[in-house]
Image (cartoon, rainbow, N blue to C red; front, side, top):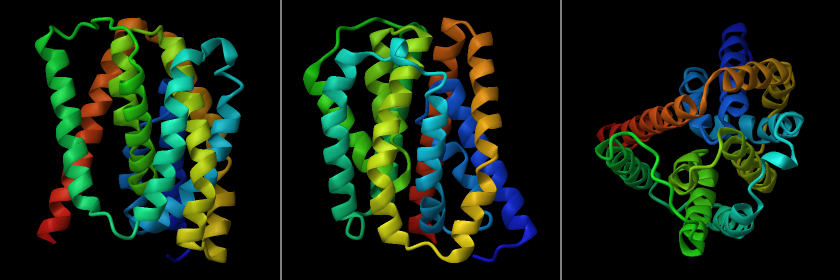
Amino acid sequence: MELTATTILVAFAGVFLICFMKGAFGGGFSIIGIPLLSIVMGPVTAGGLLAPLFVAMDLYALRYFKRSTWSRPDLILLLPGLVIGIGLGYVLFRFLNHRAIAILMAAITLAFVGLWLARGAAVTVRQRSAPKAVAAGLSSGITTMVAHSGGPPLAMYLLPLGLSKEVYAGTTSLFFTVGNATKALPWLLLVRPTAELWTLMVICLPAIPGGVSLGWRLQGVLDQRQVYRACYALLVLVAVKLMWDGISGYLA
């Protein structure tokens, strides 16, 4: 990766978009901004760039997502699986078939959204389930470590609970705050950033306050139904991106 003006502009825009998603929906949709980064760097380099920036985003977002927005019963069930999943993802990073995992996750996500549409695009509130929460945390940990795409498993668990938009976003935010802090060091060990990449991280830091704050304002404007519909729409975009990454990798 060369530190050119184009690299700086594209990386800054990608980080800003990811921060915007963080502020609006609490996180989990960072893969939406990764296509921008892929214009100027490889996926592993992008992972190394984002790992420390995710931690900075999370710390800034805590000013909006306070304790009153955290669903403690769900986090207690989700977080152990998340940490274990990140550990498994790190160990298996060099041996996992990333393409197959991307395709499988995309298919599951599209099926989940399809069932929601079949029910008339309405939220049918379900009781929390410890086994489902553990499975969601574990799956999210593996996929967030492997491809920064831990959002779909978590969303598939949280959305059917019918949480308020504030609690949904706050719970998601704290979940990924723990996850991103846990995976930052493993990613840095895998990538071993160059001086240019460290410099680019510092340059992208100013994108965080504006992106998160703008996303938070959007969440305040949208009502409960609009937020949930936006989350399902974003899940489709994430699934399409994952499917494309998986299939194109086999065709290359």
